[in-house]
Length: 502
Image 1 (spheres, one colour):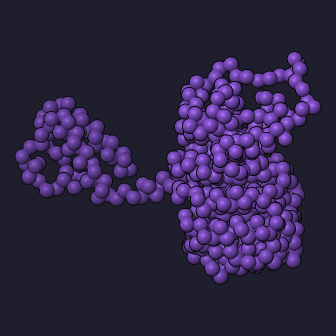
Image 2 (cartoon, rainbow, N blue to C red; image 1 turned 90 degrees about the horizontal axis):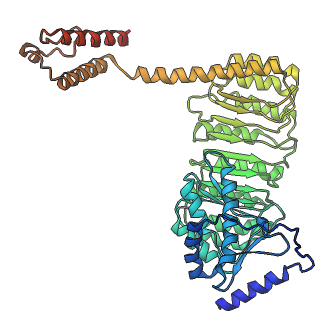
């Protein structure tokens, strides 16, 4: 059976070869000079056991990592394919380094045909070097054959990988292999992302049904560039969020019409989700016929009785000015003590100058939201004074982004006010910490520290002082030996205590 699978993969690779293209002396064939022997040694053990590795198709140059394909091969001829694995490792490492000081995603080379999984050694090496990595990302990948068994085996042995991301940039694919993989995932996989993966309503139905009966909890679910067509799909999605205890749900650039969007928010009002803390709902299909009252009801319910902290409602350019005014008016009323909403992102809503007054009322009355993002909207320069006047009366916003449209002077003043709020918040935190120190605890700690200092210096109070019970009195002075050095020490401590009390 193993030989048959290898031959099948070989014939498929031969079909993909382009014999019309030939390399000449001017073509650049990349081979690394400084091979990573540790990586190759570790990998040699894996491939001697499994007989798998990476090869390239001849339609691209050998150095083009996007042309890599993964299929079975005989166990001999390791040195050639080991170099290809090293090139893939370098590509993955470059992608990780481009993410900054705290990378989180390990991106596998795109365009792979996964008949087996041969990246385990490279991923482990990167995760050891960059401990913040927790996501494995597949891009424009196809899956078949023994990939599932080997990938699950890798996940079971690597608990640092907690998130999986499947992204397609080229075209939608009905990836049943991805859906079949979900029930077999180990318990530590707590986050899933699907972007442009499923073509047709049947594939979405199968995904939702699989997630609905998933035995392990999830905390993160990201569905992007897919199509929802029925109310049942929305109902199943709400049930998935509730059953799996998802805290972060992102629905980005999906095809969701007005009716389904209304059903989504209405269902969240009727069945509040106690675990939901971060929600992103971004789609370009909503029109001015969509009523934002269901969004207002959702925010009123989840920000006051539940624990919604972040709400992103972006990329809805066709809502219209009346809907936006209604949304800001509703937000102005969400200022109770139980309101937990802290981050509100309203990008690309086509907020215009006609919405500035209702926006300013919300900003002025806001006492809960600390981050307000309004990028890529339609503000004008004459919108600046109204927004600026509202910000002068707001002491809670520590992050405010409005994008383009306002003049540089107004933007500088806005940044100054936000910085003022940020500094005031830091001072308040320090002040709250100081308030926790009571006078009695201060006296007690003072005497405890002073006695420890005496013990360290081998100083013993007189018997009259030991018998005294007024150590907590600030006027009490310990009787020291008549040495001048001890008196200087005591005077210094008393001066410091006096300054601290002041």
